[in-house]
Length: 314
Image (cartoon, rainbow, N blue to C red; front, side, top):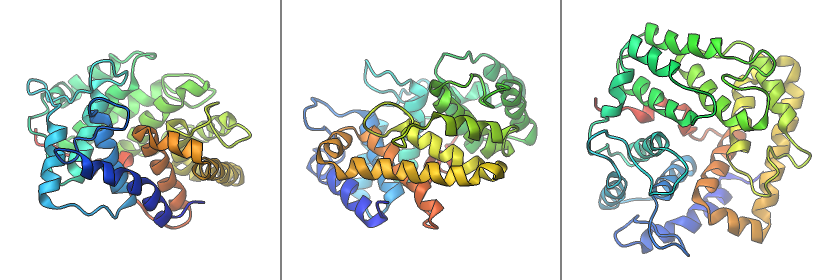
């Protein structure tokens, strides 16, 4: 599998020059695009955090943070991607708060959007308002609230009870059944439940469902490039594997096949170029590599699973 030094050279070696060519610094405009995009600006910060080795001056950190802060709504505290982006404000907010933390900086405006979640009753009503088929990314706000507020065990228990009541009896997935499109919601909700309240019930069923989605190439979709489905699947297998000891050999084999799929893409000039042209997909690959390195005893950050990165002043 690709090693850490080679990954740094590949990913940061591609994006670091683009950052430094930007005016001002980190107002990243990718080749073929007319303007910078908040998602891409934050993607590169997350990649640098996972891979390490990107040296920044305080002035560069300030400029990068200022570019991110530019897209925050002062009234709600939410960050916003440009018009036409399919991912919602809650996703932009999570990405941006995490990137600012990585840079040692904070949001410019208070996250008023978290206030409805801070009390136990308000949080219960907020969770109950979610409907399957709508964006699961709204639960990034719950992660931000948990990281930022002195929430107690009763608040955390609300989410555990909400999650447990919605687990599908066949797949173990929350809020959805055993179809591949449910993998990303299951990843986010299961990661959050595990961070707040411990591993979920029926973890062995989740493992079996995830294993069943993998194809002969080692991928979890029919796309020829890896992305978030592979990262989400790898992390769930890594997180829940100890709860499914009977599947340990198949988990190791599945993760080996994911690594082979990633290696094949990175070794192919055309697919590698298309991957690097999409920073958000490239971030998914870096996150996936971080999971696989952990299996080899190399500890790199798993930002989506480390709530301490997302504490903000309320």
